Image (cartoon, rainbow, N blue to C red; front, side, top):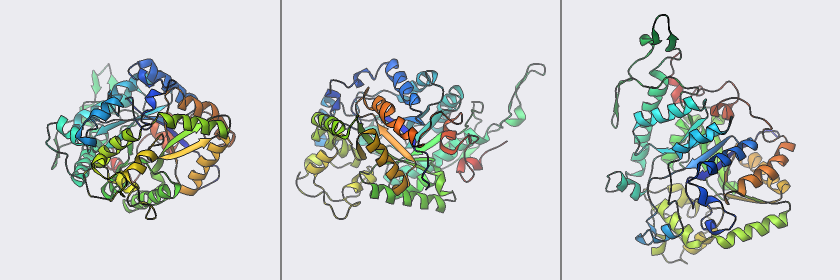
Length: 457
């Protein structure tokens, strides 16, 4: 770690109403009701690009939150991830409105088909000039499983085994089916694609059978920039092998530091340099001209939050109905097919603290399970620098806590202070998303990454 280490920045959203700061849709300044308008999304993209953010990361799910009280009543009243639209369909419009910003979109290896998903990402990478990333998820909710014709979710570790093979298939499609120079576009010889430079992938595995050639020509990155957020044992192993960016969600710096150490050690064990994993903690930033004004703003936000909504979302993440538990009895860790890392935050990560459901519901207000930074631009910049230096993170996922307010505040107040310190870009470097991560000239996956093993010239 060095004192002039660049801080990478992602905007963090979902194409829905209630995402991280649940209940704040009731705030009069919140513009999130416009989530179904293209100009809402292009405006966000332009704001982030004005601040030289690396990317906009859009979380997604294809099920409904229905674990709490065995019902969707709280979910619907508080708009917890519903209604929600497909973020992949927004990328082209946002890319057309910007020149440099990257776009990381969530898609599931559990319910997508590898050939179809490979084509979608190849298309977006081609038409955006290489500005696309994929947040790889394995989808744990019961409602998602039911929506795709399954009676129950696939067991946790099995989902990751499926994901591993899924990645092998898409790497073959993106990297090995076409040579870089397969498209010759020779009018005189009437050869658009050289048949000698295109081949079938002949993948015949346990979960997927994909024998044919890919149908998209090579895009600038070939493989999109790859992100992942698993924190279980299986999730960390998957990230160490495949991820280039890793999302973590912990409220304290020491917890994040421990997670980063584990991830970088796992990368080395997987044969990759530890620095090839770029780690981004979920972060809520509330800023104003002074610390006092920032804290006033935070408490105003908190007044709009709802503890019950937080518990409903938490129940869905961990597959445990918080409404069925004594609200004042400490929560214990249980094995489930939910997101194990989310449950461990409140049961195992801090052996000195026992959390009750009531305390969890209150704690999750505004900042969810991530870091909270409140203060003037100077105070926030100091805190971000401390996390980079002490926790070895590479940047931050800045949540859109109050849509139309949070991102403009950060860009107009915090970014100038970070630029003054030489911590963030004043102008973009490199053309592709992956070059944001690794520097100009690194549009393709790095040596040691499994996609590189399939690369053909």
